[in-house]
Length: 287
Image (cartoon, rainbow, N blue to C red):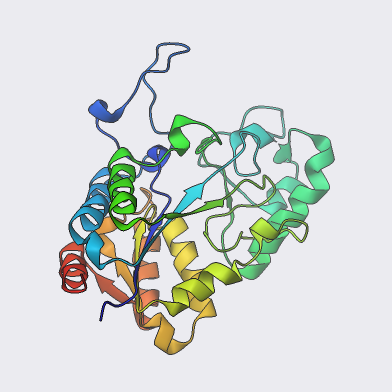
């Protein structure tokens, strides 16, 4: 009997991919070549392996879910939101802490946003998770950068056609007041925004699977946060059905140690680490 194998692909979007020149279109407005905003080294090859798993092992998959980062240009984690104390722009990859804002080193460009910004910064710091990182504007809603990597989309479209199925698409990140690395919960859930709160329904669906293969970008951030949140909601038996496909994800440059700590912690929690070749054999055996 065919088992319920579920493939989860986290944020396989153009803005996170180190795409070769042949994948880069021209902006029809200004004639410039469109380039990824936040490319992760190795991600193009990672996602080509994901596409290969779908094309070559898709008959063994019961479900595919894709998560999609989706931001507004003005977002608490984008440079458009902040300025330095003297009014200068804040560069991408700047880390901002609540104490720095209280000291006047950084301020929201809109003064009316100060109180809410401080409340937000205090929450993840108190929880011992992330400090606010200012990322380049990325995965802006409606943009080319927010679109799915061409090879992955083509592969899952073929799977949908062959199986008369539908790939589940999970959006995240459209609330501009909270970071939303995880596909199942924002870093600081907004009480007025259900989309930022824990997605019990999706976690329950994953818990029903005989195996969940986790892939996507970036291993140090969105894959990490998603997996941590899922693991926190599952019992030991269900955690052992999760598989991190380590050659189908890569860390953001500079966060390699962060990524390795994540892999070690997940392995200790019962999550299996595997490579695409091993996963493909399992999918083909399940067809």
